[in-house]
Amino acid sequence: MNVHALAHARLASDFNYQPPEVPAIVKDDAGQENPEGILLRSALDDDLEVIVPEWDFSQNPTYSDLLEVGWRAEGAAFVAVNSQEFWPPIEAGDKTITVPRQYLVQGIFTLSYRVTRINNYTDSLPKRITVDRTPPNENQRPSAVQFPDELVGSITDEYLTQHGKVEVKVSSYLGMREFDKAVFFWSELDPLPDGHPAAGEYRFSKEEIDNRRLFLAMGEADIRASGEGIRYFYYRLYDLAGNESALSYASPIQVSLVPAPANLPPPRIPLSARGLIDREHAREGAAGERGVTVEIDAYDNVEPSHFIEIDWGGQTLNEFPVDPAAFPLQAYVPWPALVANGLGPDTLPVTYRVRHGGSYSNPSPEATAPFDFTIAGQDHALAPALLNPELVKLEVRGAVSDQPNELTAQDAGQDARVLLALFENPQDGEFLEIFWGAVAEPVDRYDVKIGDVGGQPLELSVPWRIIEQDQNNANLPVYYVTDNGVNQQLAPTTTVRVVVEPITGLPGPDIPQADASGYLNCATMPPIWEGVTIRVEGNSNFAEGDIVDVAWLGHEDLGGLKPIPSTAFTERKYLSKEQAENGFEVTVLPYDDHIEPMEKAASAVISYELTKLAGGYGKSQRVLFYIDRTLPSGEVCKP
Image 1 (cartoon, rainbow, N blue to C red):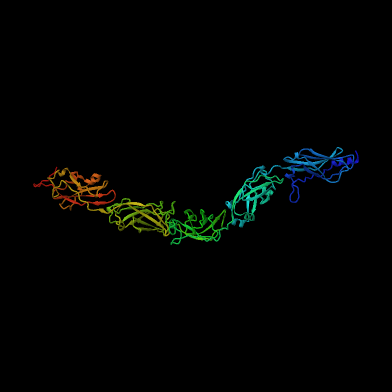
Image 2 (cartoon, rainbow, N blue to C red):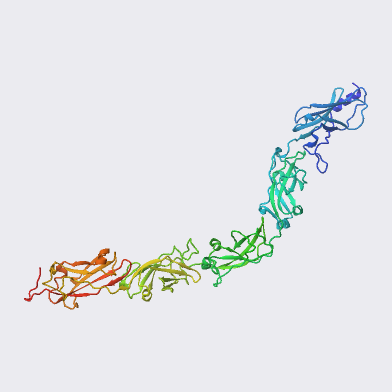
């Protein structure tokens, strides 16, 4: 072996040649090779060019240098896929060799070369090569981009003015890697025509890929230049190798470049003559609107596509559409929003803003709304309704009859008693008032006193001068109202049966057994010891279901002035239809109790009382009959 060959063998064991160069490896903007050795997709359709740096070429014309290029999976042994022999004299400079295209399949490979001279070889340092033939998203069509939620389907003039661009979000996709690139398109057509110019492109950073935060920005100028109407956003993905994905699905968006709402006047809250919003206002409105309203006056750049959103003291009300021909616009404030800030008294701010497309205007100037929804007594679920079913009912009793919720003729001329429990949590300055039937003014009032507690019993009264205005009413409504000087609450109604005014002109009853002079004596037939029959004739005042109480009372004298209490007799009749029309009879018995005490120059007074089923009361005329049970001999006749 010559000296040159020995030197070569020695050097082969001491060093490696420089790694090969591959022009098709992707480079960054600074010209630095991709550390993964990713090959350009465009280079994979031909043999891969490999540049081998100049080495210490053989100088001996009898020995050649054999150059082999090795291509194998990472970690595998050297496998030559191409070779070229060089004989001295070898021209100075780098040498070019290729990797045949059939080896350029998907995967990660090790590329190196080997120079062999006289059966001794030297390997180069290896270079990692990545062959990527798979397009981003594995050649599936990428998802449509997502426009910002705040646009609500429309890009507006105001949004572009404020943001200067529209950023869309690209969904994560299969095989995403740092430095993937998106080329995007903005068009009024769907599908996208061939050859349509791109609107821009963007390469994703490693951080964006790792965090799945992929955004593309469409500039304000380009959006404005494309005009109004429906526009479609598309994109294609490219990896570092240059693999191209399919065109994404279209993402439509409305572009509306009309000027934004401007010069919003403050809202107006109509108030009643009381100067604040109270429960009556919440029920009826300031002037018959039947509720609390907010009025919106005309503003600049109004469009029928606008919506108004009112902020009532921090409560956002349901938005409503704008009718440019209907200013001032009116919106109702629901009860839950009215009391969301408490019952008051207080004042709250009111503003509104205009939604146009997916954007909102700045809030309007502020208006203020004074309110007081406080009440005397417990609140209820149906508020602000005046009737509060949680308040206890009152009870009415007659001064004489003392029956619950009933006044009779016995109570004529007397004030009625009203019994009730005081409402909850009574406070100084609160009061309640009693109302009777159709009488407009309160008939009595109770003012809360310091120390009063809820539920304590109260007794008020209804003057006779009020009662006598409606003396016969079987369903007279009586109720009370609580009041704190601002708001009132109506208690449930108590129905009172008032039958106070007597029915007049009722004819007296008769005793058919008596003689023409009105005497009952020893000649009376049938004999009085068999009973005295009292006859009550039918009467137009009688009706089926009415009650008639027939009475008899004996007296010691002929004038009916000296009653004998032990002789008192009564019998009650519930009238049938036939009895009401044709009359009826009752018999006074037993004789020993009710008749025998009257012997000579005595009398009996008979009468009846009528109580109407439908309400009403009356007493008949009192009729005097004479009783004398003595014979001319002075003897007293008896059974």
